[in-house]
Image (tube, rainbow, N blue to C red):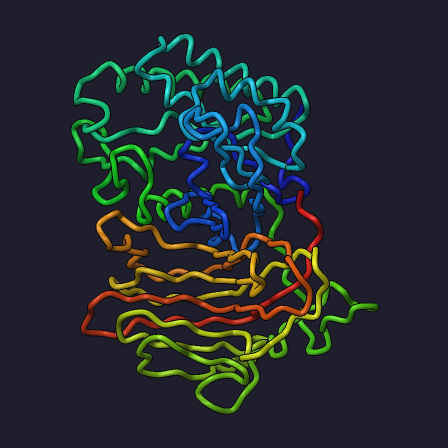
Length: 423
């Protein structure tokens, strides 16, 4: 079969280990896309070109328990099919369930947890079997190499490093013979070229194996660029002031009262800032853009930019699924620690959904966000409303470490919409 690109659709599934699972996190009252996640950053930086939707799911699914802990749930379902601790054969055994997901492209990570217990030949044969099964069903597949680890996990000169290189070379040759199989080399930006041991760049990992925010950003940025050749360009949304929610005629309309950020003061009408210091705020109107941009300068510490006005009551019934999004432009700064979008259902058992949630390093400090300027779209995982007419909270959570200069961010086109049932 001849591969044709761009492919129809933008739904990208992820299959693999903790390196995949940790793109998202969920608990009793929350669901997050994580700033440590490489797929999270690819989704943000693509500006809507790819979609890795997940949803809160507290059910226990046999064979999907993290680290093999029977009776434990990942806390979410959807297009992230990563399970911590799984070996390649465990992943292979879940394939038929994964194939029931609705996706247009799938990215496969397998074998990293086998490196110390299996031969290189066995690991590669299972990797190939996984891909071949996906190809049999007509799927487009991107195979990931074995990700390099720090020397605290794989000793310098050890067999694991040699086996990984062999498997990665075999994977390239394997993919070259299959038109719908491709290899994205995440090691190309992950590994420090000056490291004699092929270890990750300093700060890219918090433990020598998994991603911290800088590593997730670097790999996600490279993946977003790579996927531009596979996925159709994101269609620009048609913006009109009358695209408003109407229970009968436009139930998918924007629920926000001021999505174009109109206003005459330093803040657009309906916006408010709490919990922190902002040194300057202004509305930016550009003739070539339909919506205004709101600029916020954060002098240090934490602040929350409320996008919904106080007392806003949502018009949706219990059981409706909602999702929020916003476009952001972030200036270069070395102090950013949190730039996330939060949507919270005010019901007693309501969920809090967060896009690009910061990563706690375990010592009370948050991992640094990118120092360079970047732009993209933050989109919360959809949540199911528990009760009707409850308060909703929507806004940007911002945090900047100690710095001589304030950090600047601009945002535009906020959305809060009812979405289709994602399960």
